[in-house]
Image 1 (cartoon, one colour):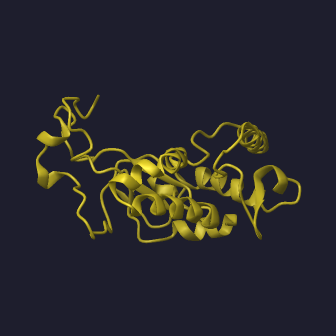
Image 2: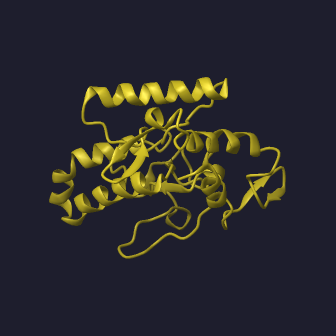
Image 3: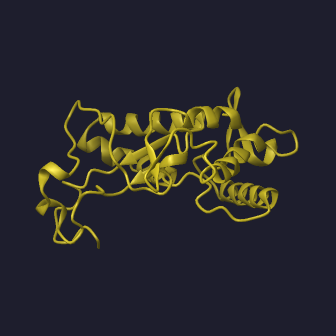
Amino acid sequence: MTGEECRAGLRDRREVWIDGERVHDVTVHPTFKPVVDLRVRMYDMAHEPAWAEIMSYREASERCSILLRPPTEKAHWHEKWRAVGAYLMDIRGILTRVGDETVGEMWSLYDGRNVLNEIDPCFGDNIDRHIRRVLQQDIFHVSANTDPKGDRSQRPQDQDPDMMVQPIAGARLLSSVADETLCRRQPKVRLWPSRGRNPGNVRANE
């Protein structure tokens, strides 16, 4: 993905509001443009000859992000460290959560795909396909780890079911209201449904 493709991807149907104002284009709004520009810079660096070998690697016939590469050896972690360092030096500052926030969880699920397949044979293939899609499309996604409208003083199973997202086989969630700091500048957000996640006695805010 190029920087311009990243900007274009943010001009979609998402609704972003700040101080009561509807933001129609986060890429040009003065509040969000600076951080969008910094994120875009990461994509552009991967296409520049001076940085391409640091920010990307070759996978078959295409180049993919070093930061999204599933690590299978210690050297891969050093490559990520070097890429983040080069990026931060280039922007001459600090931007937190610049790499993919949740792809590490995907790598863990991939490592445990045999266990997942014991639950449902399609799970292992799904996580493999997801990781390949992240690499090929250069997707940066974040997670909304609990339903914003839930009461965090209660356990997930004690919540009002009409206020919480519940997984239903064959259903696809097309939209939601999310209080997540990165939603406005990322192409993909993964929601973990709260109900059914925690069958024990731990409260949602613990």
